[in-house]
Length: 277
Image 1: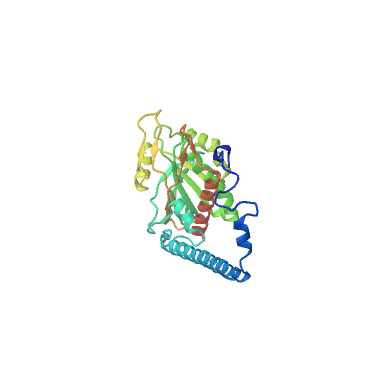
Image 2: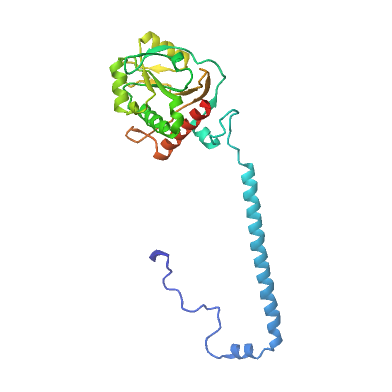
C-alpha cells in the first residue's frame, strides 16, 4: 500500500465494540451460563463447514469450466502429409504445405562460379529451392542465415541436400552480382550452394513456372518478390512448399527473433531430411 492509500483521521477504536472497562455490559456477558457457548461453537463450525464447502465447489466449478474451455479451443490445423518429424506448431509457423507430386519445372542457368547448372543435374539429391534478390537487404539475408543453419542441422544428411536460389533482380543479374551476395552472406560455407542467374528471358520463365511475382520498377528501387521455398525430392518431384516470414523494426529494418530464426532452420532441415529418406 502506498501513502495515498492510507485513510487519515480514522478512530483508534471501532464505535461498535464494547468499552474496554468492566461496565454493566461486561458483567452481564460474564454472567451467562456456559451452555450458551455450545450453540455459538456449533454456529462457528457450521459456518466454517459452509465456507469450506463453498470453496470446494468453486474450485471444482472453475476446474470444470477450464476443462470445457480447453476442449472448445480450436485444434491447430495440420495438413495431411506433413512429415511426422515436424510438429504441428512448427508446420503452422512455416505455413508448410504438401504439393501435388508433379515434376519440378526444368531450367538451365548459371551459378556464382560461372558454371551452367540445370535442374536435372540435381537428380539424386534433395533440392531446397528459393528465390533471392542479389542486392536484397530485407528478407533474403534472413533466409540465407536459415539455410546456413539448416545445413549444419542436417549433419551427415547434408551431403544429399543442395540449396539453390534463383535471382529475382533483373538489373543485377551478372555472375559477379550473385557471387558477391553469396560471399557477403557466407552462403559459400554451404558446400552445395548454388545462386543461379541468367538472361532476363530465362529468369522470367523460371519465375513464371514457380509462381514467383517480381516487381522491379527501376534499378535503384527495392525489388518486391514472392518469397517461397520448394522442397524437391531426389527423383525431381515437388513435395512441399513454405513461405518464409520477416518482421521489421520501426525504422524498417528486417529481422526475426533468434528463436524464430532457429525454428526456421530446424524446420527446413527436418523437411529436407524427410524428403531425402
